[in-house]
Amino acid sequence: MAGVDEAGRGPLAGPVVAAAVILDERQPIGGLADSKRLSPLRRERLYDEILAKALCCAVAEASVEEIDRLNILQATLLAMQRAVAGLRLKPVKVLVDGNQLPRLDVLAEAVVKGDALVPAISAASILAKVHRDRWCVQYHLERPEYGFAGHKGYGTAEHLAALQAHGPCDQHRHSFAPVRLAAARPTATGEPHP
Image 1 (cartoon, rainbow, N blue to C red):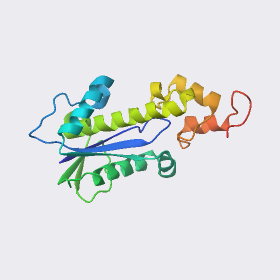
Image 2 (cartoon, rainbow, N blue to C red; image 1 turned 90 degrees about the horizontal axis):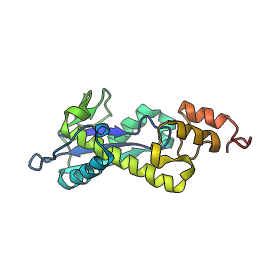
Image 3 (cartoon, rainbow, N blue to C red; image 1 turned 120 degrees about the vertical axis):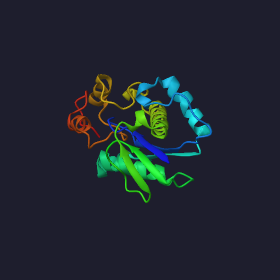
Image 4 (tube, rainbow, N blue to C red; image 1 turned 90 degrees about the vertical axis):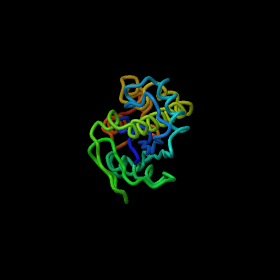
């Protein structure tokens, strides 16, 4: 049985990330929970333990271009589909956090609040969240003026101010209203955004 979850549906920038995990019952992992309820340090430690102990796992993304072309829900389902396809073992059943299912060629069930109820979904939640947070920290090195290492792409006051000052960058989701509005406004220097 594989658990599947995503990270990054709400942010204004970056890919949406999904993970699929098949846990090994002979190697239980203590402390699995919804990634949002864990500290960053605890997530990092569990990330390494999941990679070491799970029977198999896969992480996949849908790009900003795919999010803008398909919409965030369809891009999320695509990332989930890719994560399941990336597992080296084919699961008998897939449990997906939430109330929507990607198109899969195996039995699948949506589990509302599954990231808190099903250990394999909790594990997938952690892998997806850590992967996406690491992407944000890495991208921050390229474009520090946006502050991605801090806000992780979410629409914080700091991020919205950076959008206003610098306009959207290549990793902003233009299909999201705050980005679209920022692209339509002139920059702080009065010049139109590129």
